[in-house]
Image (cartoon, rainbow, N blue to C red; front, side, top):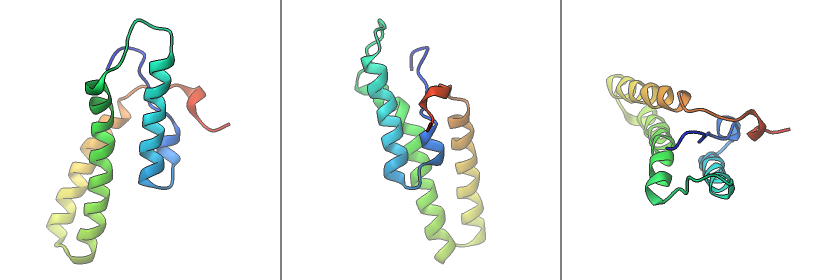
Length: 100
């Protein structure tokens, strides 16, 4: 995504998958409204949402695996989750996007 794109701090504290994804969508809408030469398209939305959707899917799979999976499978999923969370953590954010 273009320079200056940042995630919303609300993503980190939102209680549900819907709220977390809404925080990212909100950030993209704000980016579209900012007076800059960059205009995001569908690919930008997909690129920005990809790690967050992956995270939500992995969290759901871990929850399911804890009910019926093997320890090995749970550990594999947790490893994949750690990689995705590391990618999310490398994304910049603006402090003004947090709750006040």
